[in-house]
Amino acid sequence: MILKPRCNAKATRDPDGFRSALGRWFLNHGRDLPWRRIRDPYGVLVSEIMLQQTQVATVLAGGYYTRFLEKFPTVEVLAAAGDDELLKAWEGLGYYRRARLLRDAARVVIERHGGLFPSDTDALLSLPGVGHYTAGALRAFAFDLPAVLVDGNIARVIARLSDCRNPIDTAAGRKAVWRVAGKLACPEHSRTHHSTLMELGQLVCRPGVPDCPSCPVAGWCATRTPEKLPVKRGRVALTAVEERVIFATDACGRVLLHREDGSRRNGLWKLPPLSDGGMLAPWPVIESEQYTITRYKVSLAVYDARRSRRRIKTAANEKWFAPGEIASIAMPSPYRRVITRLLESADKSM
Ligand code: SF4
Image (cartoon, rainbow, N blue to C red; front, side, top):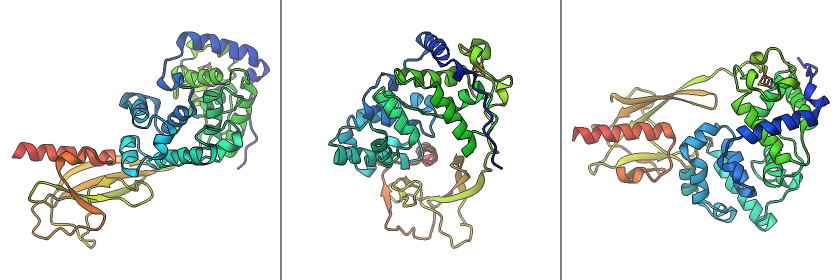
């Protein structure tokens, strides 16, 4: 069913007043986030790609952004990065495809633009991994040029400000929200305007129940039921899957690892899959972990193959690693956790 946009954007009738109130609030409450100090388009691109699908709190707490820029300080250094060091630097953030797209974008900037980021929207959109949101973010945050951008925080703020009842994850809802965002945008102060809207969404107009009594733009807000907004289509149910893997060590205590070649975690090391021809292995499960990735709820079970009388065959994409080497290779976080626990318990039992 296609719904007509149903938004009552009071703020668009007085955008100057709305922006001034927001700007005054930001002067007193805006946080000093590492990427807010950055004007360099490369640093902005890294932060935007990192913050797609990963929360600000996670990126900050893990020190991922600062570490990534220390390792790859310029677009040239990133363009020349190999898979192993790139994936290792991205470890813990998940959605590893983003890291490769970021490097691909760096290569295009070098090859097509002589190492200087373009500021033109079409040229930005032609960079790998850069869509309308990221192109807008580069124009606003790196170049302070007129732009319209809507991330999750801005979408929530606008849906509430304009009492928008269209689901924001549908074409009609997205269109309605982007249209209001365009009317509120400030061409002269693009960078500050978008930072303030995002900050409002993170600190005041939060998911769930917002802090309306503290809101600097409550006078421009059209909704009376903010806790019911934004409307979203029902969530896609998670599909349960099992991952059965083995923990095998050789006489020197080295651990057998398998390099993934699938599209999701291509190039990352993990424990080898259990290949038992469909029969459950006679080995006990010694570790387990549950995690969620995209739309899958994964139950990871680790079978103990250390005392196997069967010879463990190693495939072309498998290799034995000494425990001390494992820290330096890229590995999905759930695997890092189970291997760390297994190696610690092996140490204690010695
Ligand atoms: S008044 Fe409440 S719902 Fe409206 S923008 Fe402010 S925090 Fe969000």
